[in-house]
Each structure stands twice: as C-alpha cells, then as structure tokens.
Image (cartoon, rainbow, N blue to C red):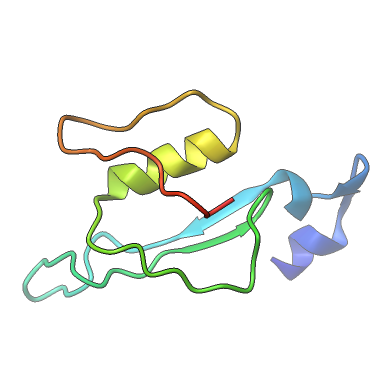
Length: 89
C-alpha cells in the first residue's frame, strides 16, 4: 500500500485509483467455516481506518459492494445474495 501511495498517477496516487482486497477462502481451515471471516479493503474510494461488523454475509455480497462502489450497477451473486453492504464507501 505504501508503494502504491508513493507513486503519482493523474491527480492523485496509484492507491487512489486502485482497490486492494485481502481475504482468505475460509476462516478456519480445519472446519472450512466462514464465520467471522476477516476481509481488508484499502485504496480507491474506501473510507479507511474503520472496522465494520457486517454480520454473517456471503463473499458475493462483498464483491457486489466493491462493484457498486466502483460505479457498476450490480445487485449481487446468486439467489442467496443480499446485495451490496451499506456504509463501506
């Protein structure tokens, strides 16, 4: 992130024009559970410096949130998706 923030791009930095996602496939490798899975987002339009507890939601809702935050009209993935999270961007 520091390297992206240090590289000028357009009217800002490369980090201003990049969204970085850090995640894992599961929260517990032994059980393959998805409870309490951490995700980290940085850069682009993200309002940083916060921790959000968004309850038990699917990965697809996070991806819908990212797409929505980047300007794409996107409602979600699959029949179990609840759509984008509020308050991330």
